Image (cartoon, rainbow, N blue to C red; front, side, top):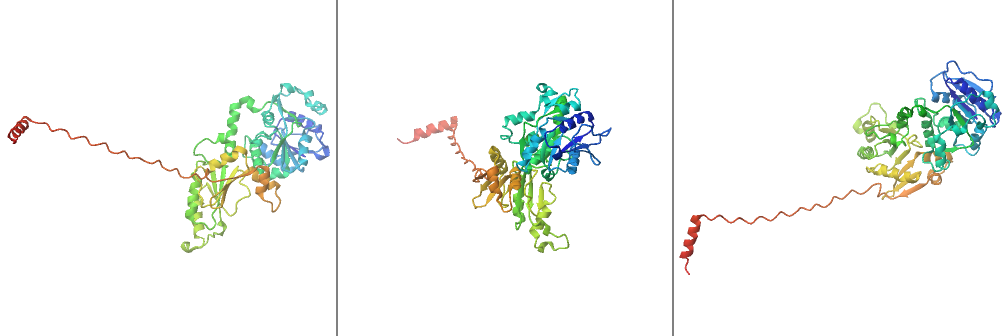
Length: 467
């Protein structure tokens, strides 16, 4: 285990953190501790009571928690990276409890517990000698973490729809290879960096495992207790742009986000520009606008030297490139990536079967009901269209061997569902028959008004008429 502790000042609390680590039940020769000094003034020093394998690493480039954690992870020698805050006092069994799970498999992220407490006047010596946290801290008066409440409500995350929510910064452990595979923490995320990192871990396919035996106290109350309204507002822009599953943060109409909700992948090889144009227009004009379109084709074939455009054998491909290359919502690549991470969903279907306006919205609604890994729509001509869950693809990639069928693995881990196309490509609505009402009958002609002269003439005619 390599315990990485980012620190910016707070020497007194750090001394308590290291004293607790020096008393761990986990074997000392299997643990190193890297204290990463993120520009502290005065500089961090290592106290007398500390684990045997403790090193001090100073940040020389960049700043912030994410950068400090990444710096420590790069310097780490252990197979497992344990992230721990510099104001945490862990129980004696904390490291052991989180480490033991990693003997089971290599794609777990283990999560420790924490309670918030106003720090009493304790010394590193007392921390080191204490048998359990309750000897020094009034745990009954501690402020519980929402993490523990969520874990309890979801049966240890077994029923959680988004378990990454509880994997926050103060204490978690994961394989070093997984840490680097997802790119570490993002230094450009100033607030909510732990949640954003955990979201990318979820897209990678990891399993989150909380361990109630890994208890710890956090010295001091969280920032939400000081100014909850500002704390929530400060983190919102970072999560809104980077975690598409937070639909509650993406309600502004017409916005474009850093990480799209769905990647629409269309293979345009040997396809005419007119067919592709229709498919792209349908993809971008659906009810679900939070998308990016990836056009897969042999784009690298297109040389930029002198050419006769009208006789170019790659005329259609070049025309498509010139048409779509400047659109920020369209990507041109030669081969689709194994997963669309960090986007949570990917659609793949025939380019000559344009999406209906409701297709994506209804497909996502369907798979979200039971968190299925793949939804396959069987089209009338025998072909298929599919919506893939990124976390399911990531899990399958972690479990697969060469030659394995990904869908068979996803069937086991998440489930694969087949459905007919009617709901996703609904037939055009037939217009209601229009009945044209018959014109109203013409009014009877009005009787002419009989003038006195006409009346006299009529009487004379009647008198002279023969009997």
